[in-house]
Image (cartoon, rainbow over the protein chains, first blue to last red):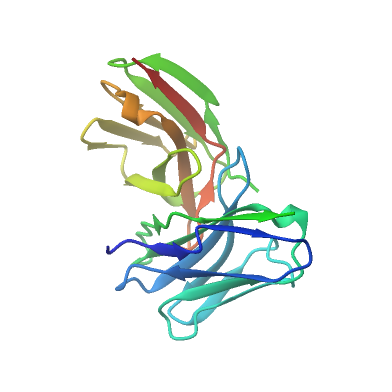
Length: 115
Length: 112
């Protein structure tokens, strides 16, 4: 399978616990993105990597959230001290973009439920 | 925050009919993309149209872009039950191409 993969697909946790999600992008893609989607809404941008460098972070990404892409391949998104408001679908996307074309391909998402 | 809105929010048609969805956005763009999302799943990329293009086709899909009105439309011809999904438009801004900003989506229901 050469698409974007995400693990786990579902995560249920108790409020206050830490969770970590993983994203494996399409292998030749140098850009990797994280988005969050709540019910009935479109995805909202969280953060973006080009290779291993984190180039942009949304104001949605509070200090409880941290993302890494240590070797410029897979990425992890960690949420510390989860809150019920963190319940959402977390989507990862990757692209092999030039400055003018930014076709992003999405993974299946990780659905987080915080009890 | 959402870039703009899709219109209508929900659309119900019968198989074989055409479905048209509209998207409006607020700021200047490099490209506009349309995605499909089946319930509870990830997004599937449908088509990308550049800011200097006015129309693009892919199979049963036709996308138009009017940058003067900051709007786009997606036409699905000869719809099928399998087209039932939510459809989102997404834009990336001028300058560096990075994040996508999504609209609120159109929920399409195609009935037999």
